[in-house]
Image (cartoon, rainbow, N blue to C red; front, side, top):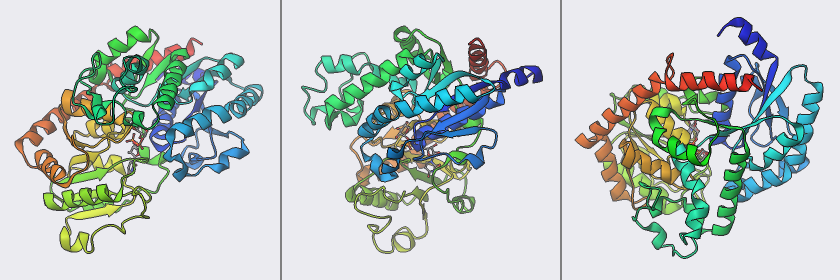
Length: 459
Ligand code: UDX
């Protein structure tokens, strides 16, 4: 970029407010790096809880939101994401407004925009009060967001009120949201339908109020759904992803990434290892954990498995594994770590498949490395993501009956061994190429980023 434009942008400050969860912090800090590379000054406004490490970002300013009550939270508290999101939006508005007004009084440059995660749905009132434009970062896919937008309508059609738990597992397509099936609607709806609908309403309304939306996706992947969404949300949409291709996720990792994963992968032939990870929030019970373990063992394929401490109900870490699992039962074909350098693992030539929960970051990271997936979605946006992976992009298979050892074993064979898996890999590599092209000059994300920069400069 022209150096005069860079230095004139430097006097424009963007304040970015990430949601303090790993899957949201990563894309927000990646976005911050992208916008910094375009010359903007960056301030990260953050909670003390799950705070990013400022030493990894010496080029940004960090502004902690001061609020004593935040100390109440620890990572294990977020079991109930719904109440956590309500808590943030109810308790942090005043402290956020206070920090921002102070920054605006002190700052030499102009705060020209507030960029918030969409889950900070109540922050539009702050932007209005302080008269700064608010842009929303949506960290999910457009495809899954469309299902959230449809929630009130689905509720009015009786989807959640009148359907039993059994009916919510139905294979029937949801009218208007094809290819999603009833079972792909976010699973948490059955636990407290009223609270979920209310939260999604607030999030959708909060997104609608923003001036524009930034998406961590790319046009070639989600063009049809973008058209659908633009009818409901007629406002600027900037599809500038995949963000992690600009800067690595490792910088914003809240857990230490076990680097021994890479030399272990080095010992394996191309496309031979299955990588297994369910992100930063998903948890399984003991039975499901053992089903995964036996599915992996029975498949006879090498695997690198991330078992996050605390991710198995009732266990610290690996206590529930059968005795001698790694040495005797899988005979050295498996390696288990607490947290992996995921992007490097997926980019490693030995990695041939990804057994995933389909969080959007994981899904995109897999697409960008041409790695086919075994999908086992847990909650939220994950079921719609998984359906697009298996039925639309056709780059993975889905465990349609939950975590069950024989289905896991057969899915691993389909992806890692069978011809079907090779065809999925070919389609995945095709998408990877498209993702690479979108960053090149005149590529879709390249052009959209230019548009975003011009848009912010117009404020
Ligand atoms: C959450 C939600 O669960 C998800 O559905 C939503 O799309 C984003 O927020 P999370 O469950 O953590 O995210 O999953 P995901 O979106 O995949 O993000 C996980 C991130 O952690 C990825 O960037 C991944 O690279 C990183 N990661 C994961 C590691 O660095 N090491 C690991 O071992 C596992």
